[in-house]
Image (cartoon, rainbow, N blue to C red):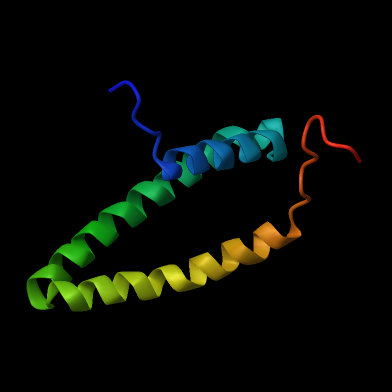
Length: 95
């Protein structure tokens, strides 16, 4: 639909794949991307089954808290990485 925002995870995934395309040596790219896709496919399937089972056993509130607790280490890691990235210069600003 026109005017809808692109989800953040799509933008992040594109940035991550672009990073890998620039940093992985050309000879290693086929194996690297095949392994990455296999790992993503396997972990997504296992996570779907696990949370489907947990959704049958636990309350929705408990399940949401478990998922939120899983995001805390990821958020802290991303915060640490962000602090190490150089801040790009703004075009037209006085340096």
